[in-house]
Each structure stands twice: as structure tokens, then as C-alpha cells.
Length: 82
Image 1 (tube, helix red, strand yellow):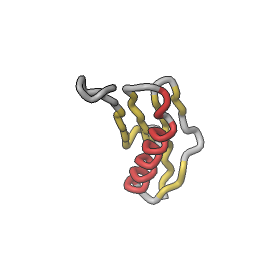
Image 2 (cartoon, rainbow, N blue to C red):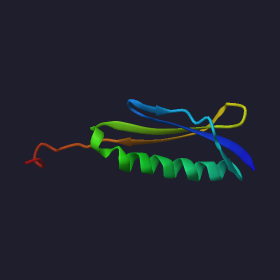
Image 3 (tube, one colour):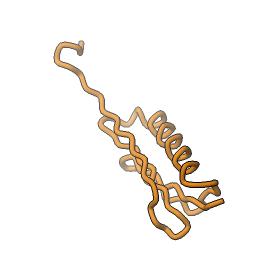
Image 4 (spheres, rainbow, N blue to C red):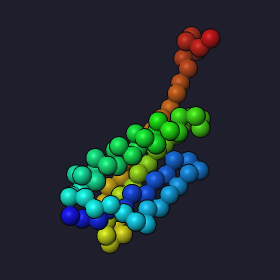
């Protein structure tokens, strides 16, 4: 098992994980980071567009080993908005 830390950033909201999570490997960390980004986007939809949701994963040594980013943009084509 390895210890990973999940830092989040979406606009004005940033958190640094100082506790971390024990996971089997980097692939398990990727699964957790992707789920976290999806949850952040779901919870943060009311804050305006455009918005980037980012989870940076650090290892025990403090190195960033993975970053998952989801960009949310809403566009209104000139003919499509009423």
C-alpha cells in the first residue's frame, strides 16, 4: 500500500490534503482522483462558467505524481439561446 495526498482546486476554493489515503497503487489513486473531480464538478456547477476542476495527487515524498483536470464551459450558439 502507498500513501497518496489529494489536493483540490476549483477557482477560489483550494484544499491541501494533509492526511492522505492509503491505496494499492497509482491506478487506484487515478480512480479516486477522477471520482473526486466528478464530485467537484457536480457540486460546483452553480459558481459560473468557465471553470476548471483539478485534483493533484502527491506521493509520500510530496511529489505530484498525477493531476486530473476537468474543464467546464457552457456556450450559447447565437441562434440557440432564447
